[in-house]
Image (cartoon, rainbow, N blue to C red; front, side, top):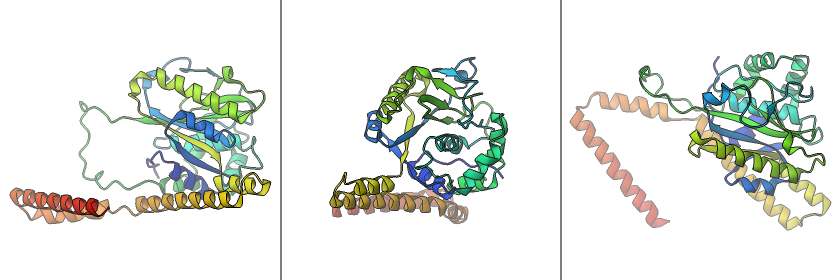
Length: 322
């Protein structure tokens, strides 16, 4: 079975790791880098999505930092050996590396714990990557978050002279034993950024280091045209709120407000994911083919115009009521 493309979305990543059995972590969209400071006390890492540029990977050294060929055994690193799985690979590399830093907070669950145990003797990062690609459990969970594309079957093969679509890639940044690492499955080994060493293991310092590193990275990636996305990996908000309440750091009222807001956000995530999984584009597409097949071009154009007019009228009526 192949691996399907999934969207870069905090709700999808949160549900994906939960379906893999992980607890204690969640993901949040970061629209402004400085907002990572708001998560400083609970921040575990960041996932960075950017436009892939093959020339960056043809050089002997990475754009920033340096290859660490002697990275510690406690840092899990697997190469990307398959297409469409770079997001899930970035998540797995991150969680399996962080689990040793935060054993009381990040619970891997049976699926990833058994996988980590199985691959612990592998020193070859490519073999670890192959193990991920061959995992039915991980692949099935990953594919459950992809939306079916109803147009693929009817699409003609792409001409050689046609420009290919943009390709995007995921990498993650974490702090492991006070050292800032970049985990990129397309690189031979992890990248270490020793200029951002944090001997005090201060999480607020880690947030500031990630912000500075990403600002520099974005400024140097001239071919990306500003097409970036950052998702924070942090402690589960419900767990964090509960601990704050138990410690007396927040009032019962503040706890109830924060708890309700978080539940509403997760409910919205669940509804969005449910709609993705119950994609009706395929049904609509097939019905349109059957209906239009018996029409002349003129009749089809008239029907399209009528549908557009009706849609505009409904939108105007809706806006008038809101």
